[in-house]
Image (cartoon, rainbow, N blue to C red):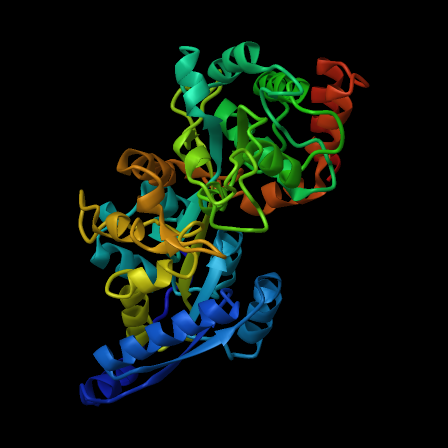
Amino acid sequence: MFKTKLLSAAVIASAMAIPVSHADTIKFWTMEIQPERMAIQEKLAEAFKAASGHTVEVIPVEEAEIATRTTAAFAAGDLPDVLNHTVQHLLPFAEAGILDTGAATDVVEKLGVDSYAAGAVNMAKSDGEIVSVPTDGWTQLVVYRSDLFEENGLAAPKTFADIEAAIKKLHNPPAMYGFVAATKVDEGYMMQLIEHISLAAGYMPVNADGSINEDTSALKEVLSFYKVITDASPEGELFWKQSREQYLDGKAAMIIWSPSLLDELGGLRDSAPVTYATDTTSKELAEKTGFVTVFSGPGNEAGAAFADVRYLGITADANTDVASSFVEYVVSEGYGQWLSQAPEGKFPVRRGDSAGSTKYEELWATLPVGVDRKAPLGAIYPKSVIDDIVAGLSVGDRWGVKSGNLATASKLVNSRVMSQVIRQFVDGELSLDDAAAMIVEKHKAL
């Protein structure tokens, strides 16, 4: 069991002597450092103070610096009380004793584990505890032209086979590309697609014991499928920019993208105009678009979704009672404010205030998104689409999370071995067998 904060009898007695009216100040480190997001968090802290009497100092920390600054603060005995962090930090922080895992477990159980999306909670589970409290997340989406699928009698692209069938029917370059897949190996976007497709196929590069997976059967399914989608893509070095541009121009039948595309499809961002329509602010393309979150390949009929989840950790040095109360407030009374920082990228991992409730999902759909113009997602997409988008968080996953090997998996992602070898394979420089074997050997060498 990870380190859980223990209080001596003297400390407990002292705490019991403090009157209820006593007001404390806690420190909150946040990765949401943009000025408009900081303003929202400051207002949330003020609302918490009005409700509880306790003060929260909101301190911005760059996401890239969270790990190093937290480790240094832990060594100095100067941790904040509450720490905003990503899924990558869950186990390293817990194993180091930085997080009060017992406090986080208590908060989630008090709020109701069943009120949460299962995927977000499962990612945070280790050694029988929920090591940090999930706040928000997003899942990668298969974005597709639902109007063209319907016209051609095609099933929604929920499986490898569905996508392959749609490509055969819809691929007609240069007017329409069946898919726009990433081929630029030095862009993180390509590894995101590879991990998403791997999860769908049931391929994990790391075994439960931390060793590299040498069984290449599912890996070959990933490689073969990636070749299918790149063969249906434009030529050149492709990354997120080209896939978004081609889709917004009406020249891509399918892409895989993050939900930040949701407001752009609605014509709310001038830097990403919907050139498909005469009026670049039109919702026409959004109305002709469908989304798939739970995507499956031959080795994983249940499907999976690549998810990025954010958490609030209660630290080992925290004023536990006040820190726990603040975290509870963020994902209950203050949840709308928290999600409003960027609704298109902050899906509610807590769908309602009890099991079966969709209170927070419904609230989220009313929050305005966009840059140059604002509109709620519920005004752009029907409820069925909203429900489908949020559903992905129930099965959200990442390499190595369930087996406790996220650190090893992250090293494999950052090495971009699979991007490099897959590019050689789709360019015809390697056979399928050689590409699979090379990936295994390069992963083992790391």
